[in-house]
Amino acid sequence: MIRVAAVGDIHMAPESQGTLRPSFETLPRCADILLLAGDLTRHGTPEEAAVVAREIKDVGVPVVAVLGNHDYHDERPEEVSAILRDAGAHVLEGQAAVVSAHEARIGVAGTKGFGGGFVGRCAGEFGEPIMKEFVRYSRRCADGLQNALKDLADWNCDVRIALTHFSPVPDTLAGEPQEIYPFLGSYLLAEAIDTVGADLAVHGHAHAGSEHGMTSGGVRVRNVAQPVIGQAFHVYRLPTHEEHAQG
Image (cartoon, rainbow, N blue to C red; front, top):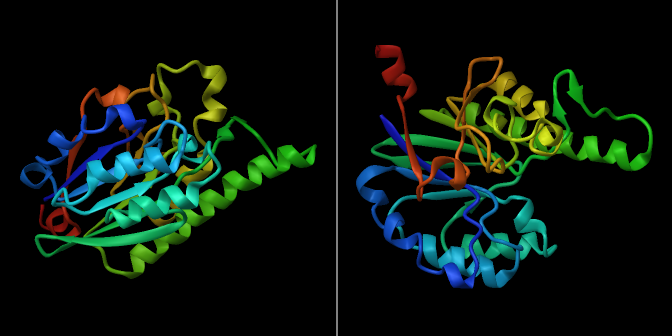
């Protein structure tokens, strides 16, 4: 059984230094991996990224992250990513990472994702160039996630996880005003997940949303935004493919 710790939307800044470290230091006793689902900083500055880096450095389990919209605000996402990587984190955008735990291979495919809405109430590539680019950007993120999941399928992972910031389904947005759903996620992410397959999908972004959801293809989705889970991280247990076959 693989134990997956996950949290998003921690929004760290210099004054919050050290608030999560005591909890993160318990990770080796309860989890095999830590997933960070974006919005790790408040405004996306290198100074804030350095705070996150000190919280996660040498915590004793692999750390895999994606950035969120807050992490792009200062328009230096590459610097933010580099600081997190220097602390040992895998930072993904249309990429995959594989880490090991108890001889099991944990595969994570990640993208920030973007908005656009969900089936029946979604934006389309029509009209003004800026609207078409909005949808195309969301599609590029989803395509990156799909390609990363394909890589994991080829790499014979024991579990496969899709990690995003924006939501792939409307289920986990319940509690947010419906008027802003198009800015909280996109059905294109769920399509990418269902096309290739995954054992779990994890996202953040929707602070007033709900924890539990599912894609139309039956993949469990969890909103791990810290205001939703109400703690430093939540742990999910996943059977490996071998355990699932034996069960």
